[in-house]
Amino acid sequence: MSYVAEDVLRIVKEKNVRFINLWFTDILGMLKSFSITIPELDAAFEEGMGFDGSSIEGFTRIQESDMIAFPDPSTFTILPWTSNGMLIGRMFCDILKPDGSPYDGDPRYCLKRNLEKAKSMGFDSFYIGPELEFFYFPNDSDPTPLDKGGYFDHLPLDLGTDLRKETIKSLEELGIEVEYSHHEVGPSQHEIDLRYKDALTMADQVMTYKTVVKRIAYMRGYYATFMPKPLFGEAGSGMHVHQSLFNEGSNMFYDKKKEFHLSNICRNYIAGIMHHARSFASITNQWVNSYKRLVPGYEAPVYITWATQNRSAMIRVPNYKPGKEQSTRIELRSPDPACNPYLAFSVMLRSGLDGIEKKMKSPAPSDNNIYEMTSTEREKQGIFSLPESLAEAIHVTKKSDLIRDCLGDHIFEQLIRNKTIIWEEHRAQVTPHEVSKYLPLL
Image (tube, rainbow, N blue to C red; front, side, top):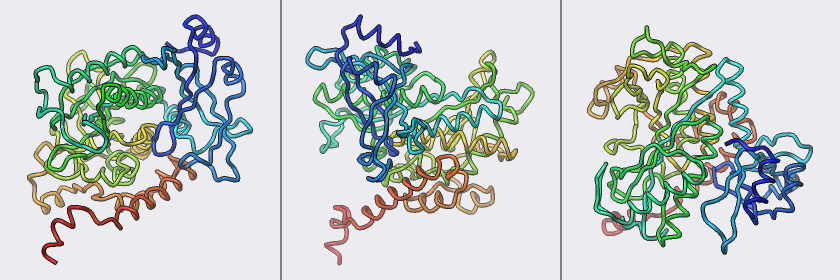
């Protein structure tokens, strides 16, 4: 349900809600929150709530620190847990400058801008359906799996299964629709899939989803992590992103007369994603650890290809089913759940739109196992690889005019700065693996 300010004021009074948590993210996708009391709610809707932006990663410099968090009443919900018996409400915020104009460093505003770009091209809806994977561990310093299950295993009732079911219950109480849940490939790895929504709603829901997964685990004495590759030798966690463009209720990716029932628009969109995949990897896979997942042999895609069934491809197109034309979509399999969803959805969309604008041609689908091809065979077919490290990803992003335009100068430059610091810090570390391998030899 989409609320307006008057609805929120009425509900908090009727339900005796005591506090409202105002949520937003920094450029890395880290959730930020502060609480206001109910008497402050009127002022929050009228003027927003001021805060110091200089303390938020990627926001302002100290001499430009004043920011305003303006709550979006359509995102209001009551959290499914209490604080000392008190009900707590929650709203996502748009970040504004003191003059009331949108702040260029706000990831939510970045996504809104790119959705407006899609509308200007005749697409009034960009739908997203993500599949987020995660692990349960005893705590944040002990990555010991809670089970030894594998993909789709029906285990005896165990901690992971119970935690997942309790998480789904909480998500549903928050109005978030869940389609599937199951045990994933890795031990103690799980997946909960959300029903598709428009991109802005889904970005808010992804942030809520990650918070709920972690909160339920914490309440039961365990730790949930969206770290892309927490265990050596096991599958990492991805965020497969199903996406489609609609206009006036019609799926613009579907064409009954075309091969695979994919419209020219869809094929152009696929080509745009493939063309810019290396450039946006530092946004969809933004951590050093992200590239430990993007290696051959663990289901995560490495090569920039598309296919209708082949799950080693970066983009998969689910098979067409008669009567399910509205479900025609593509699935991008390279992102991981540790990304900022507002920025990740933005770069996916703009890359696809660039393909549509320039009428880029997508190659034939790669329905053979790309991992089994030799480098010469891949080269002959024009199959390129995603970046192999964060350093390589940063280098490619720096040169992309499209990604700069998509993110805006402020977010683009702050992300490059942040990622460079992260990489420089990492490359100076001496790891336990290096010590155990080389100290006895050298």
